[in-house]
Length: 391
Ligand SMILES: *Cc1c(COP(=O)(O)O)cnc(C)c1O
Image (cartoon, rainbow, N blue to C red; front, side):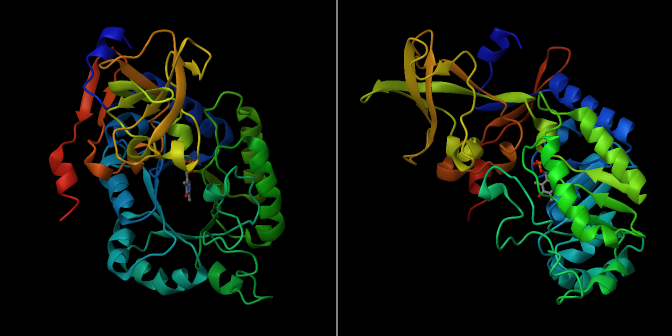
């Protein structure tokens, strides 16, 4: 993107680069074609629906975590690709949502046998074609952080073998009568070796139930588009699995779709010294880059180095009153001054989907940098967005 274009962006603003998004989609499509798996987008991680005309050319649908994401999938994704599938999984469904979820979902995934038993008949009445599945918990994950580990101790996500087999107190036969597939989701930003480990546990515990199932959904967390991911091995594993059990395989990545497809542009508002140089930006780690605090991780800033690496080091902080609203310490070749732009790299997945209007700070605009070099600002926010979610 041209420097001049960047200078003229009204900030804060997320910029998704169409060409980079398409590059990810093409790689995911390669995996689909070579492995025979179907790949659907997890809206939790990336829900910029103005890109769905492009995304829907490659991915087979969306996975949603409840009514609102399912609606977005049905209304904004399927209109570009009428064959696209809407999968819905929720840790628990509510009576008031289930009819509409049944109407707009092709696949409905339950977290527990009790939820399946509660809603299966109602769903079939409303949508006889809906396919049902149960999310199981393979109890193996090498997720790097507890907050992102769905298989940790006392996990509320998925049904363990003990809660499934009738040898203990489970319901296997009763469940198997009603489901078309099984889901698991156990990875987070991981390479294919981690999937291999999970599959060993999953097959050991659950393969005796695969007979008659139409599909197995391997969840998300596959870091397929990250440099160094062993795509060919993933393809081999999926093919072998499909052949061994005669089932369809789904993957539902979120992060891998939005991975390294764009940035967040902010403007320096003020610079001062308090033991070290501090710069205040018109964005917020807390409100706009939440995983930098939750994970936590240090976002890359374009043209910067580690603290002390280049001549001018600053603590970059947000424009809220939260003391810890800090992106980190970064060094630059030139001094920062009010009006300078700061570009946080790779801020498209798990950012705007999590944004809040905390402290009344302006929500960043959403823009698409088109392949032809134009910048489309597809959404701008204002005071009303802050006001209207309060009362
Ligand atoms: C979050 C989530 C995904 C997507 O995970 P990524 O790490 O973004 O690939 C897929 N499936 C389920 C059930 C999830 O909760």
